[in-house]
Length: 233
Image 1 (cartoon, rainbow, N blue to C red):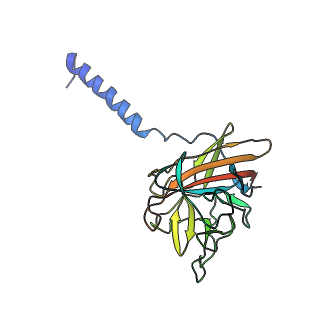
Image 2 (cartoon, rainbow, N blue to C red; image 1 turned 135 degrees about the vertical axis):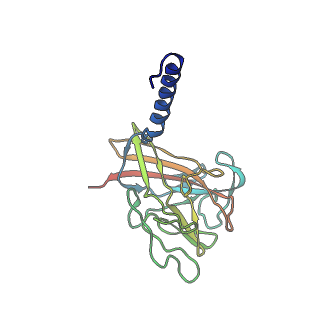
Image 3 (cartoon, rainbow, N blue to C red; image 1 turned 45 degrees about the horizontal axis):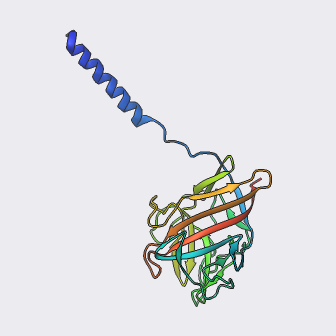
């Protein structure tokens, strides 16, 4: 049967709409901006004085607080004048390696609950118990598979995902990545951002991540890494 007149116009409009909808559905996902930096983000040791801290460090924000104003949890083992700062020193890998995982040892804790991972940073003391950082391929809390850390440079501006960033303390694990394993940014969890100088390799990275469950439920870690990026050969 031949279609003519108004019916032909209606059919043509319908076909156009279907084409547009089909095209939208099949389009490729927008690729992340910039170039992936694959290598080691070698960490400067944290240093603190009466004005605060520089280098690599973290702070714990109490529930209801903000990144800008706190309130901050004070670590009684911190040697800083402001004990909300816990400084970090690079571990055996000299810092964070992107494109792969740094899972730490097995077992991950000693008999008293001190965390033993020492590849990214040396274990530090938090309320009389050693805490340590690793990047895990499977989240210890949820069992979800996680992507390897990725940091991208877009004309000197850094972004990326550090979902696998995991803190261990007192026989417990706390995901401190961004975004979280389910892809969300709960609470104060904020995107990984930073700066990068291609000539010198100097970088700064920062993000926040809210803890879900356990003794620090709704507390948030605020992380700052600083140092020099060295590309993989």
